[in-house]
Image (cartoon, rainbow, N blue to C red; front, side, top):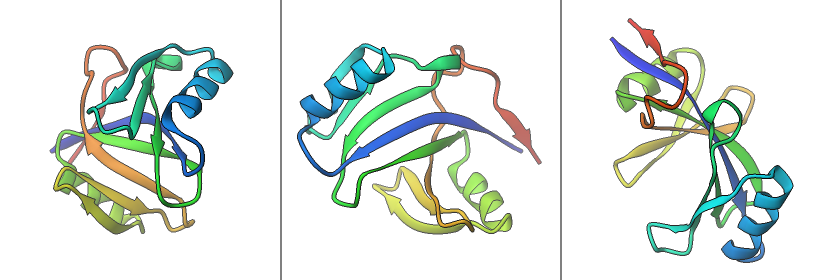
Length: 127
């Protein structure tokens, strides 16, 4: 058995810089910037919790700008396999820590480690 749930949204930005992108999305969504440079790599800026405690980040990317969702799980491999059985496919394992996947509809999403268990609704348990 493993658990998973919607983690939140990643705002992928190819153009501009992290500070400008985070400032725009912070003001557009009325969420504070709680970590302007997560990991000190100039790539990720964490905004304050969104509705329902959803995790929202701005990240600088090489691919075209888009918004994608993250599904978090306490067993990344089991969740990726469950989603594959539903028709998704694995695209890339990032740093051995999470999977970039693609839905049958062509939408990209990530399966990431479960975090902030106390702040959000309980995850779904899967057999």
